Amino acid sequence: AFPSLKSRFRGALGGVLAGDCLGSIFEGPYWNSQVPASEITGHFSEVQQMALSKQEFLQFTDDTAMSLSVAASLATKRAFDGPDMATRFVTEYYRENWRGYGGNVVTVFERLRERGFRPEAPYATRSTASRNHDIDDATANAANDGTTQHNNIPEWEIPASEQFNGTGSKGNGGGMRAAPVGLFGYHSVDETVRVAVSQARITHTHPEGVAGSVLQSLAVRKALRMPVGELNPLRFVDEIKEEMREFETSLQRQQDSSGYDAPNNQGQPQQGSGIMECLDAVKDMLREGQERLGDQRDTDFVSRVCEVLGSDVTASRSVPTALFCFLYIVGVKAGSFADVVAFSISLGGDTDTIASMAASLAGAYMGAEAIPEAWQRACEGWREMMQMADALYGLSGAPVSE
Ligand code: F2R
Ligand code: MG
Ligand code: MG
Image (cartoon, rainbow, N blue to C red; front, side, top):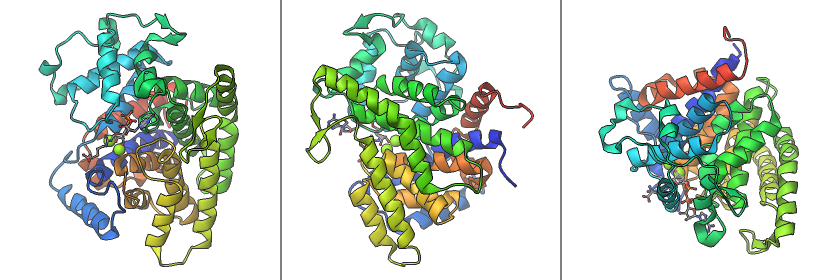
């Protein structure tokens, strides 16, 4: 049976959680190497076994924590609201700062807090069990209304704009939490792009960091809307490129007028965010994967994917990779949701984030029922994630009975 739209909304956010929870134990030990298939299947079997007697034993990390904040803000405010979203990020970080946040983004949270984007209640008194995303309280407590402008930048973007000597972060933090934007923007590409840019810029103002958010948001939206059985991987990428064209053009216009001059990852001068070149590389690798079908040397191909697309913490070397993992496993190899997570982890590097983003795309396309039941039991925060998905589904205006 085809998944309902409600199930696909749930699959998108369930995928964020499942990929994060299943992938995170590999993030440290395999930072610079691929993960052997036996390690992944061993982990999956262990989770399957443990889920028979235990629930919520796999902890989520910053990827899920921040996605929950984005979802809650959009669902509550029914629009992008900078002060609200910034306050939620800060609140979550100070409540549970052990969730494995990026090395530099924590400075943004500190600076945002200093600027008044903070809740009134003392963090220590709130327990994990009573996580409360009813944020009207948190925003009401923010000392700053967030409207002050500084160099034409909204107040809530100032700390991010000061990162890395003023170039901004090009980490994948904006992309890793972007899935809810794809759900929120279900009806409109323009709205999706606009919100994707704004939510990213609270922590990531580098063009690559922002482009990661735009790409992941548009890809989730497209996967959600794609009729089941009609996924054409190359066409999927071409359509995303078309949807990103205006974002790239306006970025280039801004760069031209400000005299922006930045090298790309290979040290060459770069125009725009470089995302179009990354998407061309995704297409090349999809063709290569197609040609290699039946070839048993899987590890060789995994090495090629790591070399060409990357698997590190930067947006350009992880968000397109996650898109590739989804399109290759589901669109080329007709694999399952679990296969997408396993392949994403096998690349090593930023395993939780790439698995989370790829699984979100798989869940949006296949629906929540494609996510193994054992994983639904095992992952901390499953119920909360489903509530967020349902809230965003409600906003999409789709029939409630579906
Ligand atoms: N923090 C981690 N993983 C590291 C822990 C590995 C392992 N557990 C261990 O202990 O060994 N994961 C989480 O962070 C990623 C998202 O990061 P985010 O939000 O983008 O943060 P940040 O700090 O802005 O950027 C991350 C790093 O990217 C590099 N970088 C970014 N911009 C740069 C620039 N303009 N120039 C140079 N480098 C730049 C820096 O190394 C940053 O620290 C996710 O993986 C999430 O799971
Ligand atoms: Mg993480
Ligand atoms: Mg990560």
